Image 1: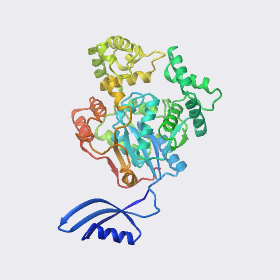
Image 2: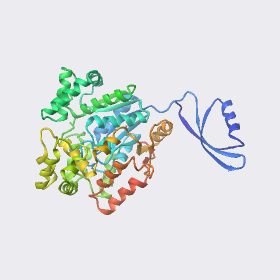
Image 3: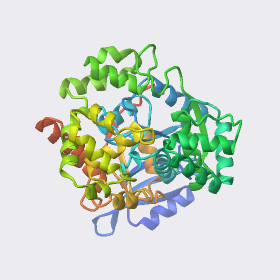
Image 4: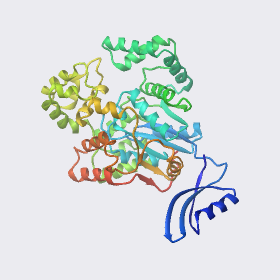
Length: 462
């Protein structure tokens, strides 16, 4: 590949004459626009490609940034150090998270935090992959990174040992049928899918150094499997998580879990209580959001809409919704009839087999009316790449690979892209429902009319 440098506004009698000059100078060229200005004269807007130069070295990360915090900053810095990447591409969930939660702030705000803190390019993980179990979440993220010509990816994990992940993935791929059969048997016993996965892996590989009982290890394991299936040439790296655990609910040092940060912000309504664990750019973006809007979103705000949906829908209608299976629709209806709040509803529905996370995803799909057939279609493979934010490095990288990317790259909504974006458009409208009318209108304008956020100067965050 070749690195590009812009070279503009040369007027010659014919393009052939200009090509001859370039050939004599030992340069290659690529015309990207021809504009007739007057007879027999052509204005060329071209890019020069010097022999021997290569495109920026890139690596990918798959993230949620709900919100961006010091642990994410550590991951970005270590990713750049370990991989030698010149461009870090983040594939980020949109308005709803993998665990079935609404984002604290919009995808645009979170993408801005990421780029101002050191990521170079942020693209969206579509709804059909974002609100999914780990396997499909990972498959969607890796597919987008592969489409963007990333040669490597890096994930955070409790383990921090990439060789343990490689060995675990190799064992499973060699014994996939036996592993899947074991998982099904474990689930039939009434335990949750994550527990069934961990138990089955321990039976398959007793004494393995990889603990699949930890949430980030599980995700990392599925990233490895997805890469092995889609593009085995992608190199994998992992960064060990520092200090706070995934489910820790208190802020006790400079690094805290996203769960603890959300809890602190929502309970205290004071961003300064979370300031020690937020990078300065992220804190300032969140502060601006709070000053301009004043709203951080959470499940309780969506309970009236979910409650209405459950009370007004028949069991048959609920069965059409993605992830509603095995008769859970009856339990959902029964709980909704007596529940007074979202936590009350969840406690009534939750069982050993149906984890809080799985139930939250079901509730999200109910809110967005995500039906089985639709999600199955859109989750087959990514149909587009939607840009959310970038800096100059990200823009340079994108310009160097965009002609080889196999799916459309979308910067703004259009009628042509509407069918592919249908689940995401619905998710955006539903996400905005609890907001005051003026904020809702502003978010929809941002969703449909505005270009991606562009950071003029790259920060030294990573």
